Image (tube, rainbow, N blue to C red; front, top):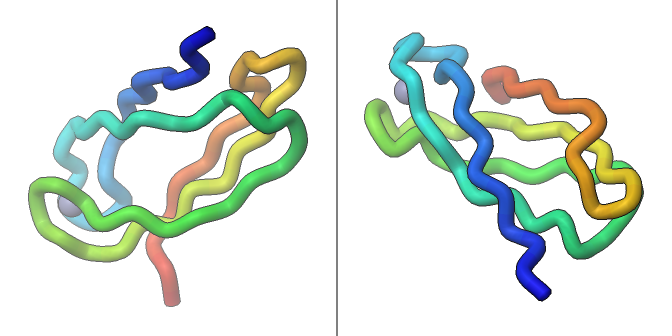
Length: 63
Ligand SMILES: [Zn+2]
């Protein structure tokens, strides 16, 4: 079964619309850092997964 989900959001740095693939296979709270595909700055992604569905999502710049 596939648990990849394409999430679209705006980069906190350059405000461009970007998308990233999230892994929904593990329930619970997750945090990781991905570089923006446009400006290459590190974006901190925080999200929660319940029943393999995205239930909360925030993206912010790392300090
Ligand atoms: Zn960016």
